[in-house]
Amino acid sequence: MKRKTIFFIILFTIFTLLLIIFLFKNNNTKEKSIITSNNNIKIDIKYPTYNNKKLNKKIDKVISSYINTIEDYPKYTNDNLYTLFIEYKEYKYKNYISIVFNIEYYLGGAHPNHSIETIIYNTKDHNFITINNLISDNKNIISNLSKISRRELEKNKIFQDKTLKAMMLDGTTPNKKNFTKLIFSNKGLILYFERYQIAPYYLGEYNITIPYNNLNINI
Image (cartoon, rainbow, N blue to C red; front, top):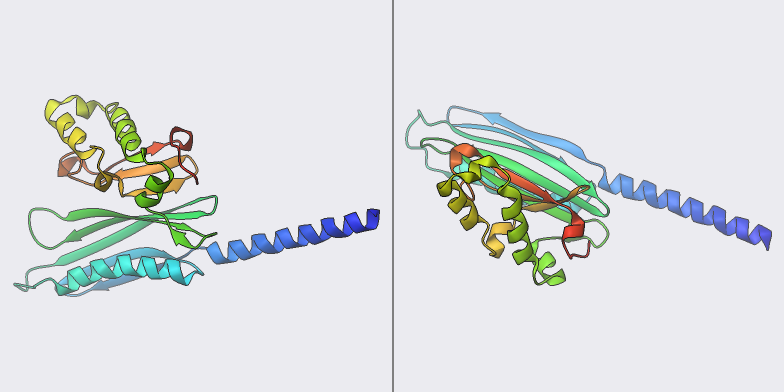
């Protein structure tokens, strides 16, 4: 009986170690870059790749959409220099890999354009997580995110200005489209607000971190 117990303990330990090695191998991150420059276009992109075709395909789709926008945009004169810069940050929490892309692109005009793209991937279920999944877990999640966002953002002194506060309140109304840029981190759910959403362009982007115990979601 004792030998049988020891055997199962050894077997369980080996299985656990193999599982850890497998997960590490499949979730290990490698960084790639795309750098190109000519008279009309300058591109500098950094992005992660994984031993996971589904996740890589999603990342490639995000990157390709911006490259195609730059390359297909009309070149009116030889003086135009269109630029595209993409950087990323990766977060790992439980079974989730989250990636946030910070994108800057210039197609002429007074200043570059900026946007944020986020991806959350469940390595256990092999599915992507969006705001729709959170709504399925908690039908009141949008209302909660709106209230929490406003409470946290109002701590910033700039929103004491009536005009800026009105813009912030408008950009955090309980509407799903205001809360699509999100990721999972060890400290909580991070929400991102792009330029113009809650403040003028010159004030940049904003993000807030909401502890999971403040949200009734199953992650």
